[in-house]
Amino acid sequence: MRGFGVDSFDLAPVQEGSQSGAVQRTGVTWQKPEGAAIVVCAVFACSPEVPQGGQSIINYDECVISKDEFDSATGTFDLRLDLTRYTPDAAADGCAPLPRRMTTLVAGCWAYDLTHVVAATPLLPLSADEVFGPTDPQAPATDCADAASGATCSAPEFATFGSCHAGSCLRRCLRSTDCDLAVLEAPDAGDDGGDAGAAGCASAHRSRCQPFGTLPLDQYLGVCVAEGGVP
Image (cartoon, rainbow, N blue to C red; front, side):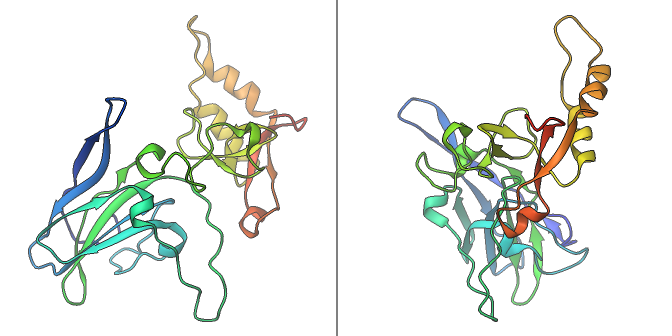
């Protein structure tokens, strides 16, 4: 994990066969780095932020959805949320944690000696299937037809998760320029080798960022919609 400024150690996948015969990654295993006393592993639903040379993840409660701690020489962290789910405690002032907005799924581990972080792994990208069970209410929707407006959804064309709006999974945004960039970066080229860049520019001028306003975080968050309000 960037920011800690410490040595790295590696994660190796643990895979299991499913009833359908497919092999799926269900966990990661590691060996405790030299000088470490405890290893902590977590699945993050947003990108963890560590100040350069810092010793803590400043958005820990906002991002961590599962975690486990180990004091053994080797260990296996199970990625499945139903086994290692993490729920933040109420703040010292009694305020409830902010609602979470899933933007990515990654796993990482970091190791402590008695007082400091001494090593950390690179972040490992995960799929929703590796983390959530088929009936988990926190799982991103794959079909927005029956999902609530603003619900987290997954679409193969998005690098991050989207939000359900008017029955469709739409790209998230903070400002309309985010929608312009999203269109320009989208792989629009067709089989006829047409000018994808020109098509992207034309589409970008017709999109805007429409806010939700249904959650505290949504006053800053919206989805990319066409100028007429139709996704």
